[in-house]
Length: 114
Image (cartoon, rainbow, N blue to C red; front, side):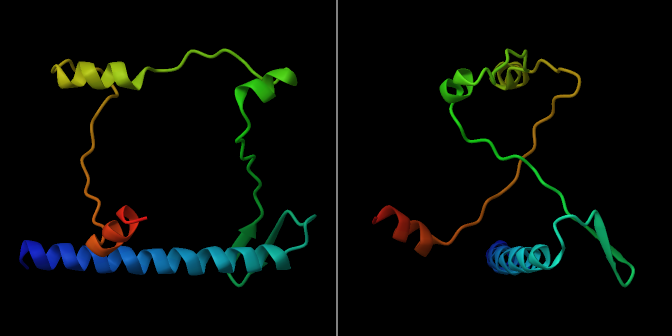
């Protein structure tokens, strides 16, 4: 398979995955609407379906601060580690992944014209 054929095949698969993800999301919403809220888990054939909830937080730090809902926390400085890696300094547990993103030129052109 040539590079062009591989890129086209990759793009077709990516589009199909997006379609399947949208269909999966719709099915998930449908299933959630059919499971009683108080239910811990249900079993369908040999499958277990369990409801999970996750808090999605998009409030500002300023708003959270008014409720006393902030904290100071030490975190790893990813930019500093990236600089060290680019200088050839190896840090245990730090690796770099390389991947591709294939998008439609038509979609890119449509986005840039808006």
